[in-house]
Amino acid sequence: MLENIKHPTTRNGKATFNLILRAAEMLFLENGYHKTTVADITHKAGVAAGTFYLYFPSKISLYQHLLLDISHTIRKEIASKIKDKTSRRDKEKEGIKAFLEYAIKNPHMYNIIWESFYIDRALFREYYESFSKRYVKGLQAAQAEGEVDDIDLEIVSYVLMGITNFVGLKLILDLGDEPKSVDSVVETIIRILDHGLFQKNA
View 1 (cartoon, rainbow, N blue to C red):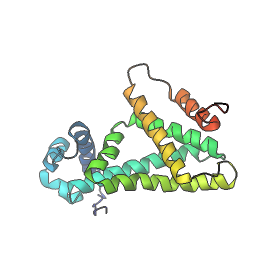
View 2 (view 1 turned 60 degrees about the vertical axis):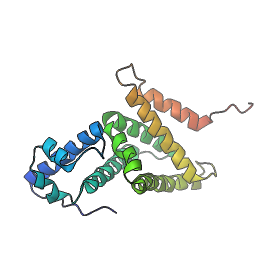
View 3 (view 1 turned 180 degrees about the horizontal axis):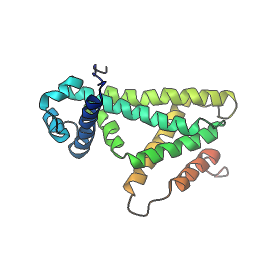
């Protein structure tokens, strides 16, 4: 359960709040959640030690906030790119592209998301289950229109999330080494989704 966080209302308060968040992101990336203390975060943010507790009841509450913020941001990024698309195929294509582009610009998201598996497995499970449920809802509408096969849509949602997660990770790891273009990668993924992986006469 997400602990109560006090969101600032003043400009200075918002600036301090964001300083703490960005400092925590950097430290979680560099040292991991467990090796990062509240004192480390406030020192990195350049704020007084007690300032942290004006907004966050605990370190885990800050972490949960970061995780939830990433989830909301990814969903907004994808929603903005697919809003004018009518077919499920086109929505999938643009959604995959939006996720990959976000991942390249925000590689720290993998640390925040996947470390939750070791911090609190319920958080990790909830993160992906919430994405799956939204995915399934869209797939059900497409299935009703005959765009998607009669198949277990929950499993489909995890297959699609798995593709985007690991392809995104691959693109991040390849940065600086003549990485493949996002467009070419998306075309390969869509080709697989369009035609399947195995030859029919195999």
